Each structure stands twice: as C-alpha cells, then as structure tokens.
Amino acid sequence: MAEIAAELDALVVALLDERRALGDDAPPDRTTRLLHEQVDGRRLTDAEIVSILRNWTMGEVGTLAASLGIIGAFLAGHPAEQERLRADPAAVPDAIEEVLRLHGPLLANRRRVTRDTTIAGQPVAAGDRVTLLWVPANRDPAAFSGPLAYRPARDQSRNLLWGEGLHVCPGAPLDVAGLAPQPQATPQPAVYPASGFASVPLRLE
Ligand code: HEM
Image (tube, rainbow, N blue to C red; front, side, top):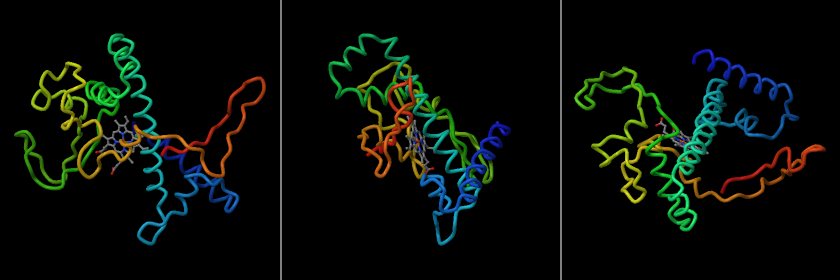
C-alpha cells in the first residue's frame, strides 16, 4: 500500500511540475486550478493537492466503479427484482441504497482518536488510530433487523453507506445528477477507424 501511495504521489507531483513549467500555457483543468487555489490566504501545498486528487480519483471514481459492479452483479442474480425496477423507476433509489448497504463499495476509512473514550465497551485513547469498517457496520443486527436480507423498503436512516457526521459524503446527492456540456470545452471526435468521441467533457448538475 505504501509503495502504491508513493507511486501515486509521484504521478501527481509530476503533473504539478509539468503545469508549473508551462505557466500560462498550462491546460485549464482542475489540477491547474488547484495549483492556484487560495485557502486562508495561502496556496495549497503539493502534499495537500496530492491528498485532494487521491480522494477524487481513488475515493470517488473507485467507489462509483465498484458500485457499478456490485449493482450489476445483484441485478443479474435477481431477475424478478430487475423486472420490478424496470417497471417502477421510482423504486430505484431505495433499491440502490439497499444493495449498497448489503455490499458497500467503500470498505473503510481511518481516524485518529481525539479523546479518551469507550466504543462498544472497548476503551480507546486519544491518539489511537482506528479503522471504521462501513460494510460490517451496515450488516449489524443492532441497526438492521435481518441484516443480510434484501429489503428495499426498509428504513435506511442508519445506513452508513455515505458515512456520518462532519465527513459525510458530499457526492451522495449526485445520484440524481443531470448532465450538461462543459462550458468552453468541445467533445473531441475519435480517430478513424473508430467512431464516437475520444473525450466528452460533461458537467454533473
Ligand atoms: C457510491 C459512491 C460513493 C460512496 C459509497 C461514498 C462514500 C463516502 C463515505 C463513506 C465518505 C466518508 C469518509 C470518511 O468518513 O472518512 C465519503 C467522503 C467523501 N466523498 Fe464519497 N462516496 C461515493 C461517491 C462520491 C462521489 C461521486 C463524490 C464526488 C463527486 C464523492 C466525494 C466525497 C468527498 C469529497 C468526501 C470527503 C468528505 C470529507 O472528508 O469531508 N463521493 N464518501
């Protein structure tokens, strides 16, 4: 894991160096924008930009990619439910929450404990490092009756799919996103003999 993290850090720093060298000719993308971003009157450090881009790529693209596989596998294995959802698209959001409760796309996040306390009878001390395991928590019988059963109509208020508290996922509302063209960016056609596009800049709204 440490090696992979170092590899990603180096990749991102190379992108930053490339943009710094290009100056005004740097591509007007998010990486360049982050280089010029000011927070509390100062530029972001390379380490901060690496962290943000790691979150965007691993945390967000990764969870969405995993969700597609999880939902696809579930639907393939449950043809009657597939039919029901096709006939009643309004039932799809609840079904997604329940499928991803049963098999979450994001396994864990880590925290450093800020004060001495007890979690489920287990003492933890300020400074300890803990791992939050979202998937087992979402199968906890204390939170969900018959936790391993697929019940799309169940109360999802204790579903930890999107986390909880200060760091709750700000991407969650995007499941109702619409698509719009990116301003000042045009789709690039694919090169012969392929058809379609090499890239289509879109905005999620
Ligand atoms: C099914 C897809 C997704 C799942 C299951 C998911 C889940 C989560 C969870 C559990 C957290 C809390 C992490 C923590 O407590 O440390 C989180 C944080 C976050 N998510 Fe998502 N996420 C998904 C997709 C997305 C997408 C598409 C975006 C953005 C477009 C996004 C943006 C973020 C960001 C920026 C944070 C960090 C928030 C913070 O630390 O304050 N997520 N996500």
